[in-house]
Length: 332
View 1: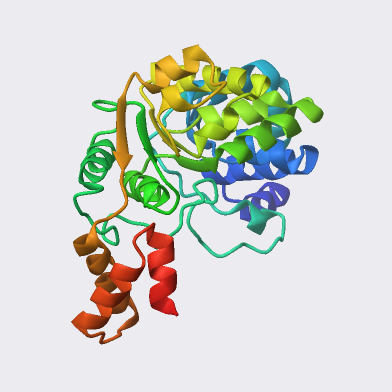
View 2: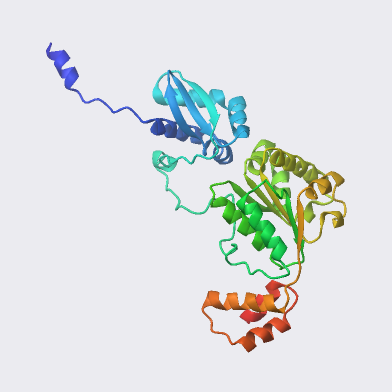
């Protein structure tokens, strides 16, 4: 009797929350897997429910769901079972628009938590927004198309193909689309065509094309700068063709820039040229005098400079090639 009473008076541990259980499981898996594999496939997941021994875990895309079910199910079940001390079942579901707020994994592993920053996958420059883009006759159509894509992606212009000379604002518009899209909670990836090629080569070298394909296909918006540089690269064009098809067929937006229109890109495969021309193609021309002066005025306002009208006009008349040269001359 006394023994029973003492047992009842012993403190009992509070049950772990669903989030805590899953975070402990992720902490275990993080120690077993490479950083790239963990960050790509498991880090974005979060628990939804637990009923009758079955845990429902949310992923962002069908692609991730299928990959986890086919390649990691047994390993994940084993880790989760170890955490709660009994056998469990796992069911994956897709909930792309939900953003979990779990306890950071670093707390479980006694690791430093990095400061919150913009999502690293996007690689967008903060200064390149629609608010800082100066609209003139030379870029009016491109700006309107970019706005339309940012407001309603993958509906009207997909892909959006923007071409023009160096330093005319193509990259600025591309980043502006990315920022506006991210503000709606969508997944954005910006890369140069060179980075796409380098990532592909690396994935082939380490026999891990699955992670490469996830990086480029599990997004809502793919921005590729200087797409003309994939021309003549057979493997790169092959992979980009399938990436393009996957994104386009699943209602994701694609934005491309180039120094020339698709038909003028030598050694670009015909099937890619056809797809690039399947959306909207717009060009950006060198800015006229009035637009150049407006750009310089915006630059002066940004730095708090009080610049006389005649000075703006003089600089704008001297530098009429591209915006980079114009701003460089103004800074000097």
